Image (cartoon, rainbow, N blue to C red; front, side):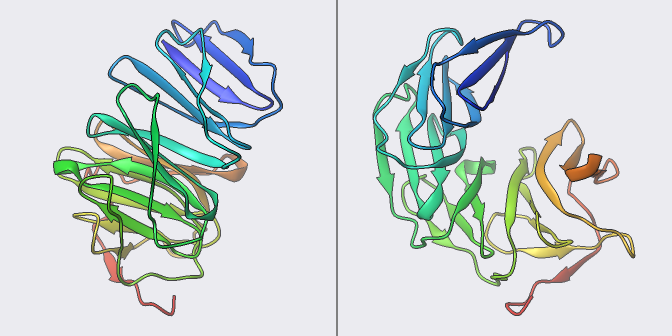
Amino acid sequence: MFIAVGSPGVILTSQDGISWSKKSLGTTQKLKSIAHGYGTFVIVGSAGALLTSTDGQNWTQRPNGLDDLNDVAYVNYGFIAVGSNGVIKTSSETGIDWSVRGSGTINELRSVKGGFNGRSVIVGNQGTILSSKDSKYWYQAPFQDQTLSLSSVDCNLSNGRFVAVCSNKSVALVSPDGEGWVDAAKPTGSAWFFNRIRFLGNSFLAVGGKGTFRSSYNNPDGPKAQRNVSSSG
């Protein structure tokens, strides 16, 4: 089953990716992200939206206060959700009960991804990169550039390499382990402002505004040429 979410409180479902059925949750909340694992779907969004379903059709709102959540991922037999004011929430595979985890930041967290050997990475505004091995305790990665609005991160699960993209500068960051990061080389004169990155099959694909997209040219490790990222940008 394919499921897409949006605003206001809209869910689209499809069995083949061609024909879609619309379902409204009767709310004005903006639904931003969906994840699936262990037979459970989880949707997160603005103004406290945190919903679960076991069939993709019937949804239950879970207690979440008024936290704005931007992304959710299934990692290590559980879910991780991230959002505004540095909020991190984790749950077991059922998605019913959620715990708040310390992030050490009040910056907006925009994307989360689980990787190789249990490693998870969160990225966000002001160059925030957080890393964890157990989804409970999170640590700031070094060499951060606070001018960056990091919008999305994904991982090549075959070797653990992470790639993060930026929505306000021509920057793509690469890490072999989720801890040390470098800036990937890019074609001269190109503008790289991306909202989302995904690892698909054998390469990373990043997409942005005005139909912009780039791939890592069938290189599963991400771009090969790199330069170090300094704290000054």
